[in-house]
Amino acid sequence: MYFGTNLVKLDTKGRAAIPARHREGLRNSGGSRVAVTIHPRGEKSLWMYPWDEWEKTAEVVGNLPALNKHYSQIQHILFSNLYELDLDGQGRILLPQKHREHAGLVAGEQIAIIGKGRRLEIWSQQMAQQVEEENMLALQDPDSEVSAEIENLNL
Amino acid sequence: MYFGTNLVKLDTKGRAAIPARHREGLRNSGGSRVAVTIHPRGEKSLWMYPWDEWEKTAEVVGNLPALNKHYSQIQHILFSNLYELDLDGQGRILLPQKHREHAGLVAGEQIAIIGKGRRLEIWSQQMAQQVEEENMLALQDPDSEVSAEIENLNL
DNA sequence: CCTAAATTCCCCACTTTCCCCCACTTAATG
DNA sequence: CATTAAGTGGGGGAAAGTGGGGAATTTAGG
Image 1 (cartoon, rainbow over the protein chains, first blue to last red):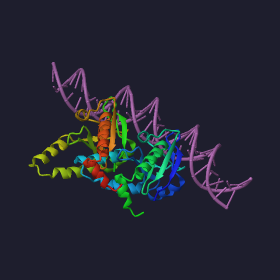
Image 2 (spheres, protein in one colour; image 1 turned 180 degrees about the vertical axis):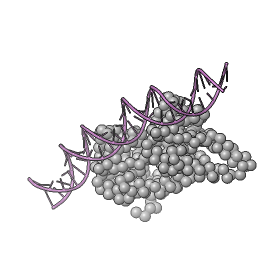
Image 3 (cartoon, protein in one colour; image 1 turned 90 degrees about the vertical axis):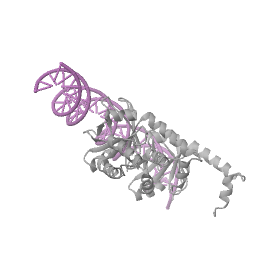
Image 4 (cartoon, rainbow over the protein chains, first blue to last red; image 1 turned 60 degrees about the vertical axis):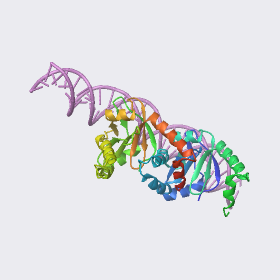
């Protein structure tokens, strides 16, 4: 179960150091392999799973009928942007160019690594901050639909 | 299970270098043979399977009732455009003229090789980009059917 | 059937990218 | 303050991608 936020620097080679507290969890399960893909509904973030966790999902998605247009679109988004990355000896991953662009990650700047339960998310620092503020506002509004749904949760 | 996107150059001789990370999978199974055919429902892409994986697909397709009009059409497209290609010593395949035309692949330009689970797909860079943008939009639209489907996946 | 042209295939060589490893700096711990 | 762990930077070697020469095979035309 991942949680909490860490700011780390994306170095000049495009590598990101995974916070040490998450490394054990990522390593235990499927070697040092992690699955990284982009948020499938347009948010400017990256999703990261321990490999074996991801495999369960991939199995399901991979066996959807490919000639159905909708399934084909889902397969396309989820598979075409998926990469299997390895933690190096220092616990870093090299993020592909395309993914950095998607999430607005610039070499040399700070990025946020955020625990989200089953997965980790990677954001640029600015985006993470911006989205957090937006979420705060949306949830505070007592008239919004969100608000009604939330109130039924047993927290 | 294939995934991820690679851009490679279709060289002046019409050859495409298969990304190294896929080669082992393509070789292990059926020699160095791969099956290449065109997308059966009009997408401007090529389908590529390791040979033995293709045989499973061929089994399914070949046993469809041939006097059913739609099945017959699918069979026709898949089988008549099927080629058995070999990886050369450098892991490249020479794509037949007809297939290059179908997918709009021009010698000397960039093409996208996209993992899609059981198979690889080959696209021109432009087409791949265009399709990805379309899919993204479809998935972001909260009213689209695709969008509803993906919400049900446990990601 | 023979020759010429085009295509395909195999190999070698160059360039670029990536990845592994070592080392330094900064932060946390007792 | 000392010690260990975490985070950061960068060099060098290996591997991947790319280009092209030339032999072998196929195709077409006379």
